[in-house]
Length: 315
Length: 315
Image (cartoon, rainbow over all chains, first blue to last red; front, side):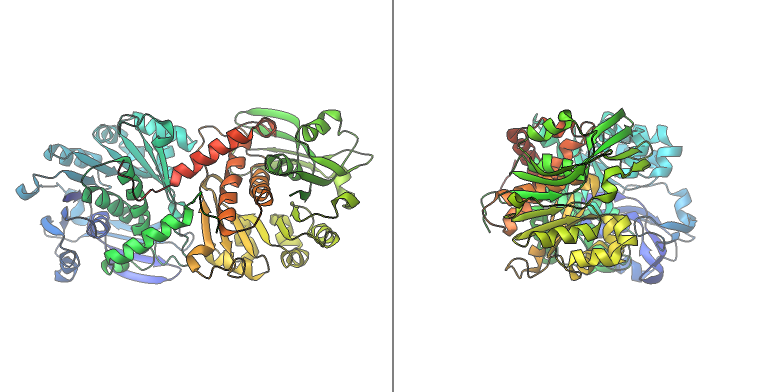
């Protein structure tokens, strides 16, 4: 079924040890929707300026992404410039121009009203909550956030968390949000804030899902934690968008399945890891634009093989 | 079959956020041999001073560890004091007294001459090489090292690497040894230095084995990388000895099996992760002294379950 995603569509200027790209198409909603589009139809809610041209639009159209909810307004798109010269794990921001994003007030087209799967990308939690409440039929809501909202807009963020099924964050954000350095206790504290599951991303080491005991019927404590590795890559060209691509693979796979079960969640975590691994192989969205489902499934198989233990094999 | 381990037997004074312990039994050979003893017989080559009493000896004896190669000399045991108050990932050394270890010249008892499995714990690479050459019948040699030897004794270390089947290091050591920040390229460069396999430990995220194509017959590139996760733990009391316990579980399992195959290597990586996870749950060797093979196998199953993807399951 379709996913509706609300978030940023932007231009990024990116410098990494592999080179520099000026004004690539970027933004969380862009990476998310491209990644998810290989699994399920995607509808975007975002705002762009008049520098968003046919060239950018065609990137979405070639993946059959629904842009009915893309508001076009006077001014310029959200712009971010950053570099990864010190570390591929963390961007150094050089410039952030909110531009038309500063006054973003998400409007949900009537054709999106039947949304069952909703992804709230990393935007102001006040807007996340408003969108969630505008789509009361959403049965599975997944959200992202970042340090800035955790530190400076905690009250608004806590209101959103109470309405989330799945929260996607990274290790640093989990520590900040919970005030707890141990990762397991941090995850438990985050679950106590409302989400039925928290997926903690570990960058090059994959991601761990912690489930509240109420999410599925499973009362078995062992079934409440699941970890997907990441594929060891011999070249990371540009880490931008890896987390949003992970989210797109993760939630896209879930939305493509008839039911949300523990087995689906496990596979979704692997598909998230797969989509993140593709994104970082090229600058911006280059790699995400050129994938096939066969290439995705081949990497899924390789990722499974990476940690698979066949207890009956002697080879 | 028996493993011979050469390394330190020491006393450690350890401070962590969970408390402080004075003069615990420690040292790489101690952690290694206790962990490995749950899988296979272990023989120790080490030196201790007259502060090594019956109390310490009985820890080894209760695990049937062979101390024929434990040299007793006048003076005091190797002593290390450190704390993990800033980070559980890295110890801050407060004091190191080499004591009797300063003049350690490993002597191999004649009863160890039939050694097939040799573990060279983190000691001077000149001594590692001497021990390796004193045991020409060793058919599988696994070694550890640390930043100090990589930085300041590189030539001696390179001579040892040429004689190793498996090198166990961590992410930081792999970067230092290879001069390469990308983990896959770093591992390839380390393999080019001689070891047939390198196991890179990632602390709380597990470990990755990179194999040279000549190790097993498998020419399949996918089969040359394997990753074991670590179990998410809700309390880490004391990280001391986790790496040596990993090595003990890893190599102990390999030595217990009739053949060294890719499947054995994969399971060994999981057993290494299991033994490391037990060690950090208590101070020093407390947890390692009180295990059962059933408890170890139960945790092995839980660790496998943590990342296991059953493609045919719909639950």
